[in-house]
Image 1 (cartoon, helix red, strand yellow):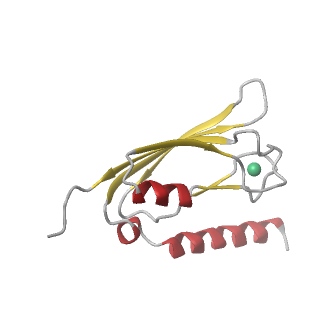
Image 2: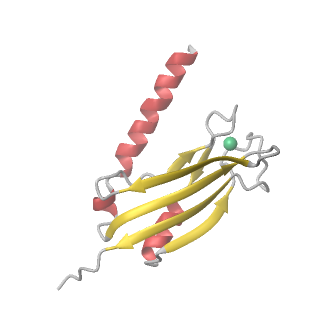
Length: 129
Ligand SMILES: [Zn+2]
């Protein structure tokens, strides 16, 4: 398989995973707004590789699996699905933490914090009668 075909296949799988995850409004109807602040680290003099703000809306897919940004770590990922689920279940507004890359071959070892995250969630106050 050529590199391009490989890439297309990867994007298709990702698209499918997103669709399979369903919409945030379906999975978690009480969530009205969600913001994920993510800092990516790498080895180097300036350990901060990248900072990202990811916004989720009720119309967004409930997909919380982020790609690793380390060069050469092709299928690396940070799966925050369980973290987000636990946060919503506990109705917590803010959850912070760190997570290492889910791919063993990543150049960042598990003891290196590959990313740190802060997840902010707003819940609807509407109560069902
Ligand atoms: Zn990685």
